[in-house]
Image (cartoon, rainbow, N blue to C red; front, side, top):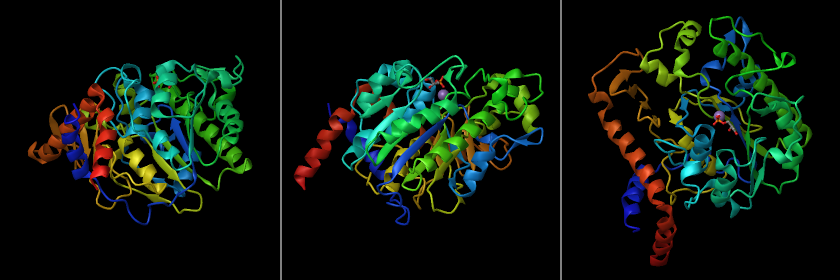
Length: 409
Ligand code: GP9
Ligand code: MN
């Protein structure tokens, strides 16, 4: 019955943090460009390989954006689809399987649905078959108005590589699609070229491959560099299309690209041993929030993909204090530095907890497990509550609760 959601609601209410009034509504009425940057981890940012910048465009963009260097992906087996789920719902994905497949018929309270009432049209743009990850079904449940998929793009053997349409082509061909949308829009672009096994045509190699014994890692830098170039061209086209000034841009890495199988090469690249502590730190993905006309700022707060929904809603000037969400606005003054990964590892301001060991963040050394205890309870509670919502389809009851509450007032 509906009483199960009461505990969850109490937990969520107790952890709610008010938005920073300086940021609330800062992007009111703007178009929202969400750009999922495939398999891009934060360690490539402001980094070079053989003396060449890996992400020159993103590095430039960061200098006039809000950049979050301590931002983590929280995905599980659902990979890209899990990152989408986190972003739109501020709920955790599942401990196994992909929620996009297993619970697509649930009731959600996703951003596309919520911002409809504020005049937004929403879309996903991704040049893959519409049923991949069960997206066509799930996007209906999340309230998306449109889904531009494979059939909406001109895809030929010449303009494709690896998993499909090259990012440059995908992003360019996306411009007429977004021009066809009502303003303001909320549009999620899902890039693809920087996907394992990281293959490219020679003409698309802006930097040479690295030279370790590990071909996957070697190619990774070169495909990241290609996607960086595709993003640069996309921003130019968005400007030419007259869509830049009235928009905000949120770029985020969807999940890791280099798995632990490649620790030897990663250790060689980073010049340090990849301990369990370092493995967690490698789960950082870039988050860049670019608002034309705003100065750049590095935001050190520890957070994750679950925090994006309240962050975006508050930038658009939409309240979230009555929502069921596990994230906290990344700009909120009172927010706790906190990110929980799907495997129950978690990160705070001073500690990393993983594999039942508490690590000191400054030294990377094991420390007294007491230091991780308090937030360990919270991490467990969050994952448990979120799973309960999904397994029990509890948001069915939530709408009614809000309704009853309103009736009482
Ligand atoms: C496929 C794309 C990549 O459409 O989202 O999937 P991934 O393997 O990264 O989840
Ligand atoms: Mn992906």
